[in-house]
Amino acid sequence: MNTRIIQKNGKPIAIVQSNDILIKDVQSTLDLIATISYETKCYRIALNKEAITEDFFKLSTHLAGEILQKFVNYNMKFAIIGDFTCYSSKSLKDFIYESNKGNHIFFVSNENKALEKLSSN
Image (cartoon, rainbow, N blue to C red):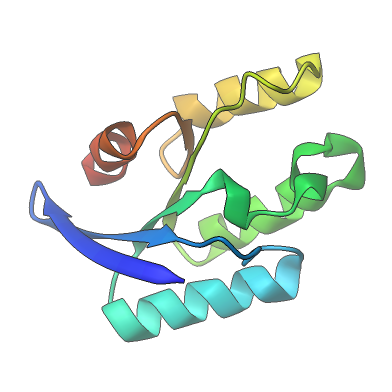
């Protein structure tokens, strides 16, 4: 796991890049939130899509809702960076669309968009 801190609009944002799966269940999500907030004092995290289990993107597992709820509960803004066009599920596309309209969870295509979303409000 490689973590960089970037200041944007006066807000520190942790950019996390990993070749390993960091988020595979609720406990690993809580571990990541604790680690990043403790080590970096950042409450805004961007993570590459490849560091999240594929089960997350199958809404029937309910994993996405459970995981993203932890970020909201701990008042962490969270962006997932990646290409989501490979998913054909209409319900997942709707989920991504609705998430991006909110203020806590974002699905973006690149780091610049993640920084833009995470640094607002």
